[in-house]
Image: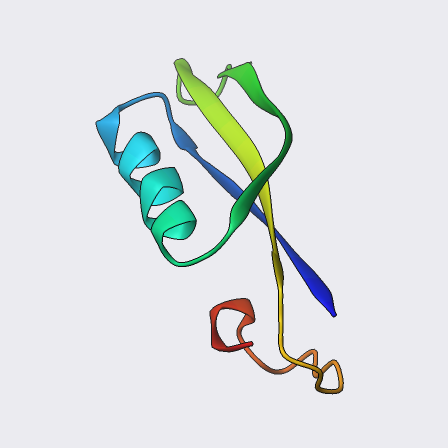
Length: 68
């Protein structure tokens, strides 16, 4: 089963570390990153989708994606 996550955060080094951590855990980049202005916080925000193949097991919506 392929699982999907969308990572997001402020445009700073912590966002890059979040994506790097996901990649080190076996997640792969999926598509292009997104970049948008948050008018409420007046800051730029980044987003990146990642996917990973999980062991054959039934999908459980109550399970955290990092636990697959």
